[in-house]
Structure formats: structure tokens, C-alpha cells
Length: 127
Length: 107
Image 1 (cartoon, chains in turn purple, orange):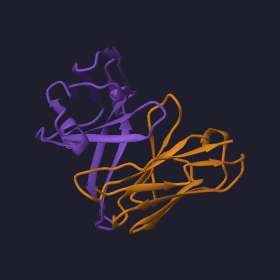
Image 2: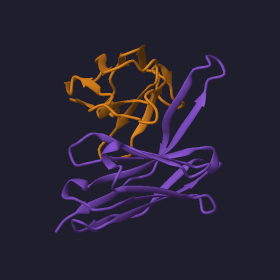
Image 3: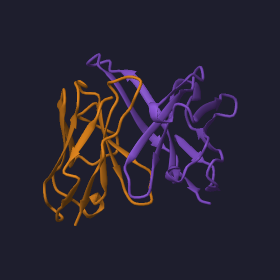
């Protein structure tokens, strides 16, 4: 079955960097993208960006454009999120998710959704 | 940037109630709209994709409808395990995949 397993919790000081790992299994890695989503305490879901499992190209939400890097290793089936210049408001639960895209054979309409998620990685930014 | 607005932000309901949640997009998104359920301490769970298609394994009491800019998620008979937060997500305005602010369904 499809599984995404993330690295453990981290505590960082403001200004530091953090790298979160997401180990995937149960599917052909290069056929799907991986998206990253975070949820701050008491807040909603926030999409951060996605990376192609096929060619490693990444697209970031404008808010994170200058502080985030997403990478992947096709051999180890891992995806990574690096966030730099951490601030207190980066304290959140960070998720990776399998990003499914395609076209319906029945309706010819495009679809795109996140069907499997990691367990989440708590990142705490504290002085 | 596209904005996704969910209403209400909070709904109080009882077991057996029919509950309807709304999601509005600030611009046209066809049927590129997904719904997720988030329970405290667990990862999000995909309920509906492409506005109305039930994800495999999701109970049939969940249904979705809408197109263009207005969408609804309906729970036909609320069960105790349905008390959670619900988020819509648009995937039409490529390459961004924006979530709405969420609706909390509580007793």
C-alpha cells in the first residue's frame, strides 16, 4: 500500500534552517509528484509547493519562494523540504502528500488531488 | 491570487443532522475542487475530488457538488466520527493548489 513516512520533530532557533524528509513506498515514485503542506497551531492548511517525482522540478507558493527548497532522490524514493531563515510563525506541523494528477478517461476532465499523506513533522521555532 | 472562502467557519451540529458546507472561489475553477477532512492529531484525509467524485473508501453519506465558483460538501447524516475540520482545495489555477480557511464541525 502507498505509504509516506516523515522524519521526526525538530526544534530550531530563529534564523536557522530545517530539512524534513519524506520516505515513500508502495507506488512508482517517478509517476507522481509530492506536495508539502503545513498547519500552524490553531490555523488551517497551507500549501507550500510541489516537486515532480519524474524530473525533480519544483514549484513553490509565492509566500515561500525565497526561503524554501524542495528536492527528491529517485533512487531512495525520498522527498525533502528545506526551509531557511526560520521565524517564530514557521512553528507548525509539516506534511508531505502524494500529489496525483491525470485526465479522466470518462469525461476528459483533468483531476489533481492529494490522496496519501505522511504522518506530519512538528517543527518548533523557539529561542 | 485566487482566494478560497469557506462558510461557515464553525458549525454546531448533532448526530444524525444533515450538514452542508460551502466553498467559494474568487475566480472560475471549473470542477477542480477537492475536500479533505482533518481530525485533531491526524493527517488530512481526501473525501471528494473533482467537486463530486467520492474517494475510494469514503462513506456514501459524504457528497460534493458545484462548479465554477461555488461548491458544497454535504454530510447526509452526521456520525460521531465526522466531527472534524473540513477544507476545500482548488487545483485549477496551475500550478498553485490553494486551500480554503476550513470549517470546524463540532457538537
